[in-house]
Length: 151
Image (cartoon, rainbow, N blue to C red; front, top):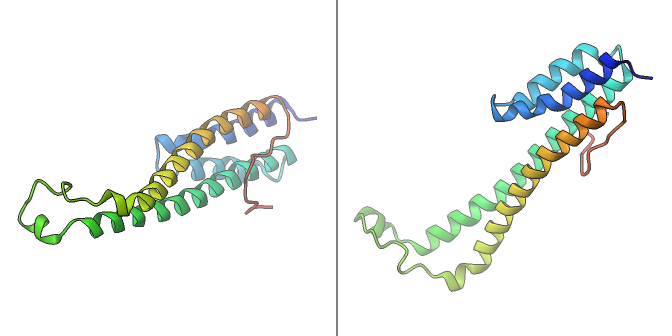
């Protein structure tokens, strides 16, 4: 049976990942601080700390993969359809001769990658809230699609 303090610290560990919207890398720094200070004293805090960090690392990997798909696709599409002479001459009609017909497949892949990225960021927010609630209630919660970096 977890104590109230353990449940609160486990919930705060999950909740601290939302500091990424205020501090760069706050979603890693604050959970590591909380988890590492109490992981040896409580199995419940240890489990929740690992889950929070594994989920954040998994979201980082998924985000990087999607960005590595989207950015080159858009760059290839733009550089294939815009001449450097138009850029040098400050031509304001850059996209008049843009060939959407031959680029629609690549653009679709890039847009889908960005939409999936937006979807996982939204899901991340709500899953963190759900994990916080579960931890506050003393329930064990495992994030979906999480790569177990820390075991």
